[in-house]
Amino acid sequence: MNNLDSTTQIDPANANLDNTSYPGRPGPDDLVPSRYALRVGDLDVLVISDGVLTLPGAMLGHNVDPAVRGAWLEDQFLPPDVLEWALNVVVVRSGGRTILIDAGIGSDPGLNLPRAGKLVQRLQAAGLDLASVTDVVLTHMHMDHCGGLLVEGVRERLRPDLRIHVSDFEARFWGGRPDFSRVHMPDGFPDALRRTATQFLKEYDRQLRPFDKEYEVAPGVLVSRTGGHTPGHSVVRLASGGDRLMFAGDAVFQVGFEHPDWYNGFEHDPEEAARVRVGLLRELAASRGSLVATHLSFPSVCHVAAAGDGFRCVPGPWEY
Image 1 (cartoon, rainbow, N blue to C red):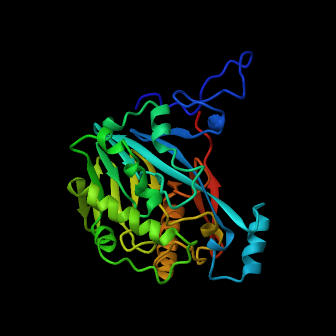
Image 2: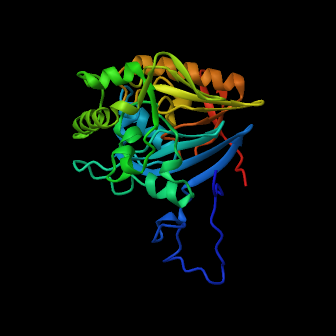
Image 3: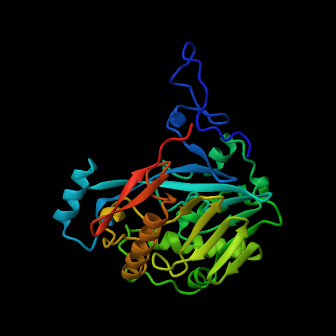
């Protein structure tokens, strides 16, 4: 990959904190790191922040007593009423292919998303041209995972032979009448999710490459359907040499380590999502591989350890 450094070099003697930014980005907002490079064996991996999404605290563990949820949030030094959900995507280079795993949230006119939808600018800041992307893998088709490809001007910059890999279950779910009867989302989100998925299926129909249970996108890059969060939710497992990394999409949230049975408001099948979460966390604890997930704090790279009836998140050492 081009320019996969995690930081930008600044001359302390001449730095002006009001104007410092990453290449191609004006303003001070990118003083907060927005990309992080690492290696998984022979695979180049880049975690990129698409920004953060502010959501109600009740979205987290809506099946538990509010007092219990509040105590957990306080224990984590988090406010009781709002959550800042990270939005992470991953770029992988393998076998001559450049693979974008999820595409960020984009911008929906019906929602107020002032600190999200940064993916295109941050790809550019990392030296990655949209035309270099050969494959996109969607863990699922919620708008914060596919909306970035609907931003004005993006489609024209993508390769005409781009391949978009998504579970067949997922494409059929959103192509029909998606069931929102068991979710607990803020007002406006169900309509925005339907609107985005419908538009995405229409605009990218010819690029879609649906798979059944799993598909090897490139050497060492395997996407597998898990279900749960959505019917076709998938995870991506990277493997090279003795190294392993799983991009778990929305299967794992921060509270899910300690309380994997707590439901998330965006889960279409909460019970199945909890079963999937436990299975993936057990797998990671046994394999000692790395984990990256969409809504864990950037850059989200961590390990998983068993801890009683739950699990423990062990942050990975920063790779300089």
